[in-house]
Length: 345
Image 1 (tube, rainbow, N blue to C red):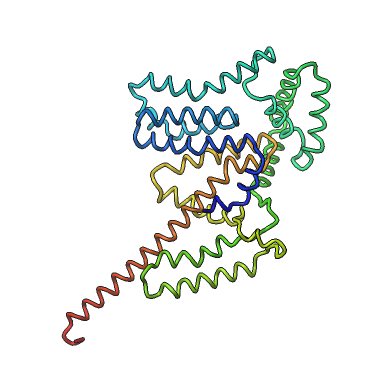
Image 2 (cartoon, rainbow, N blue to C red):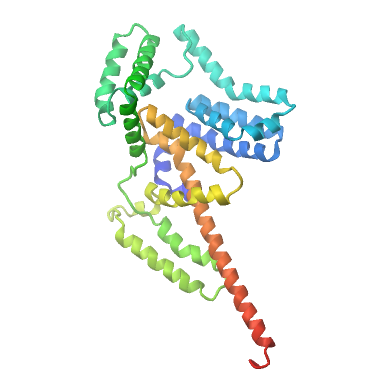
C-alpha cells in the first residue's frame, strides 16, 4: 500500500526508463535469492541468475550488488554449492551471459574491450572533476568539448576514465568530501508537497487493528486521531491541489525506515536485512563516484526504505497486540481470582 502511493516511485514510473526495467528484475531476483538461501533448491538459484542477468544488462551497478551478496552470504552459498559444480557454472553463465554479449558487442563496434556503456565514463568524469553544485554546468560542457574533439567514442571514453581516476588519486580528501555532499543531496525530499494522508490515517488505524476486541481500543484510536490532527496542522500541503494528500512522501517513509531497518536486523528473519543492505551500500558507492540522480536512488534505495517502513509498522501492530493480550490475560486472571475468593463473593 505504501509503495502504491509513494510519490517518487510514481514519478519515476511515468517515462519508460531502464531504471524501471532494472527494478522490475531486481526485486524478484532478491525474492528468488532468499528462497535459495532457505531451501538450497536449484530452481531458485537458476531463477535468481536469469533475473540478475537481465537486471545487470539494464544497470551495470547491479554488479556491485551481486558482489556484496556473495560476500554477505559466502558461507551459506558455499554450503549450497558444495558438490554441485555444474549448477554453479550454469548459474554464473546465466547471470553474466547478457553482460558478456553486451561486452562482445562493444568490443566489435569500438575495436577495444569496453565492459560497460560509455555513459559510465561520462558519469564518472562529471562526478570527480568539478564540485557537485557546478558539475552539470561546468563538467558537462568540458565533456561535450572532449567528445567533439575525439576521433572515436573509445578515445573520449578512455580519456574520461583516466582523468576521473587521476582526480581520485591526486585529490582523495576533496573528492571524499564531494562524495559526502552528493550522498547527502541524494537523500533529500525532491517533492515540494510535504504531507500525504497515509500516515495520519495509520495513526488511527494502528491501535484499531492491534487492539481488536479490547475495551480501550476506542480510546487508543482517539489518541491516534489526535496525533493525526497534529501532524496535519503542523505539516505543509498544497490546498489548491488536494490530490497530493493521497500520496506518501520520502520524508515520511525515511523516518519510519530509520526505525524499521534496525528492527529488521535484530528481530527479522536471520540475515535477510543484508539483502536490503546490498543495494543501499551500492547506492552510496555509486553516488560517491558518479553524478547523482533521483532515479538512481529510487531504484537502489527507496523500495528498501518502503520495506523497512512497512516492517516498522507491522512490528508496531504486533507490539500493540501483545500488550493488549497481556492486559487481557491480566484482567482475566484477576477476574478468576475474584470468583474463587469467598470474601469477594
